Image (cartoon, rainbow, N blue to C red; front, side):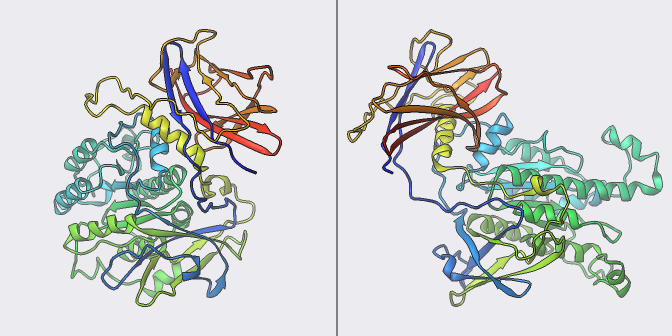
Amino acid sequence: MRRIPLVFVVLLAATLAASQAPAPPPQQPTFRGGTNLVQVDAVVTDPDRRPIVDLTAADFAVLDDGKPVAIDRVRFLGADVYTGDTTLAPIHSHDDEEREASRDDVHVYAIVLDDYHVPRMGELRVIDSLLAFVEQLPATDLVALYYPLDSVTDVAFSRDRAPVLKGIKAFYGRQGDYTPKHPVEEEHLRHPQQIESIRRQIVVSALQGLAIHLGGIKQGRKTIVWVTEAFSEPIDDLRDLYEAANRSNAAIYPLDPRGLSTDRSVDRPPTAADVMAGVLPAREFMRALATETGGRTIFGNDVRVALKQVIQDSSAYYLIAYESPHPDDGKFHRVTVRVKRPRATVFARTGYWSLKQGTNSVTAMAPVAAVPHAVQTAVDQLADSLRPDADEPPEGRRRVIMPPEVVTPNVTLLAVPTVSLARGQAVGEPQRRHEFRRTDTIVVRTVTSADSVSARLLDRRGQALTDLPVSQGRDPEVRLPLGGLGLGDYVIEMSARSGDELAQQFVAFRVVR
């Protein structure tokens, strides 16, 4: 089936914007969602620790519990140069956050400041290094700062470094200090013998929730830097945390402010009693957490160098997917990733927990399906339309003039469709922003010689929401009142058919109050 390129002209009330449909890109590998799909991040470097970027699936071998498995997909991610508009718009909503995070050329970092498990003055050993880490992140990458009681719904990943830097400078440890800082901590004082246990549960739950949230906004590798001295008591309730991080491809880097220590109580190996009880001492747990999630422990005294390695790990890696041979058994399975390239070093997480039959965590933790390229392009164009001009103050009204209409010469069966977005019947002056209120009605008009025209409304990830009725007259038309839509980003898919030939165009828009 031959695709016919189309051009859409977008109008709303007194404004007009036009854009040319891009040529279809090379087919990218897609990752099938499913309860048995295992995804493993692999960082591959040469003897000089430089990333190797030209490997294919044939260069990898994966063992699951020591037995070879067939690789479903291998995709190289993370090292792309950012290709979006270099004039970066602030992120005001979770739709903005998800749209920008989903790009392969954008990396996502979360810094968790565990003030419950860092003593007062202990934070002074790492504050400068953390500030330097944030300042050296590429301007296009996203970062957020969390404390244990922060909700993922209240903190958004952003390119604005100022709030993160301010939060790091204000960090101070509260280990052993039970003075309430948040209203919820007033309740902790009612259970003085259980405060440490409560704090431990809060931190583990916060890391788990953060990992799940990261899995919902980006498919590839995400990084969590967890600043903590860990817990003074052994930990035995960590399966949910491991599982959430692994299924979300979130690599955890525990950073212990104490650095290297000769104190055997700090770095003791597990005892026989620990093994029998199935628990781990603090640093042994931190090592296990880093290893099992594809991160690294940061225990050394040169924290700045270690944090540079964190950025390097995120900048070039492979995402390997395969079907688990152990469906629904609820057990931990060891994973080994090997590369056939001589003298190459592979760094990857070492295992995963498969889902247990009958659990209800499948939906929440299933891998995120890849966004179709044409839909992602439309959403990126929406993002570009909302960015400020380079010479416009950030606080000013953000506008961008779209490129002029270009009619593609090789359109044969179908004339150039016109997509008009208007309030009711009124169509007027050119519109420069693809942003509409819920009181608006989008009118999609096409002029075509095609046999039939159809339309669908998609969410910003390309999932179909509903078919849109098309009046099949001389000039087929779609009317979409926005009053029934929630706030956020949407995509209209227009399809025109003549015989076995199909032409499609995607246009994204935002609904605001």
